[in-house]
Length: 326
Image (cartoon, rainbow, N blue to C red; front, side):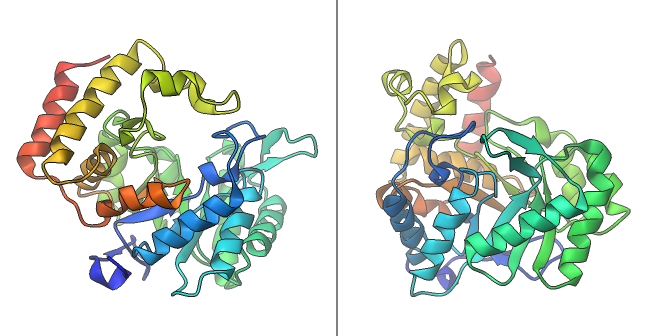
């Protein structure tokens, strides 16, 4: 498992981007000290995690300007600069910005997006961003202006492809009148299935690639989480407040992890790898974003590049979910 050529690559939507089935998600490596942090994180460990993912064959990284208020992009940039192998595809997102006091605001104004893009190019140390995504469709009344700006940046050669994240079908229809959408990035996991009803079928019908985030529900389904570990999370880890990490859902979710662990043990893979494979089983999903905070974590999840669920295993998981609603 040492290069992406050994894994089946998947074409992202209407683009020529060829993706491995999982990519490296760089949310957690933004570190602590911002509103949606995962607690403190060592930069050297983050860089080692990225290098390990690339060495194991992952060929794309997904980050965002807002992660760590620019810090995640800067760490990704350092990792790219210090890695000797083939350069991965680099995806980032715009629309969430911050004031000097670190409070977050949102803008899809053309001038604001142009500033963000220049900041992202500088942090990442690249001349072109492979996929530039509107992080949230907010403020909604600026959506058309924002999408026109992204289409213009693409024409200027600063970005290769444009995508959306967290958009509804109505919002996608609205921007499609302006320019095609290469990809959608929604939350999708066995605990967050709302997009199955309308959003994934729409993306599939319109040739829009889908890269789902949080397939392991921010670490909950990795098998490493216990009630005691969650209770001991740092104060600046947003997951302490997360609905799936607290009762009444937590007990059910930890029982689900036991089932995933049982299925995974028959294939010598972790419950987290099974959780990722469950999302990749959906034909609308192009590839999944998988985060890692250390080389060791990445190694444990790398089998998701090739592991796939059998129909009977997929059905077994779905039967548990049906039988155990919250």
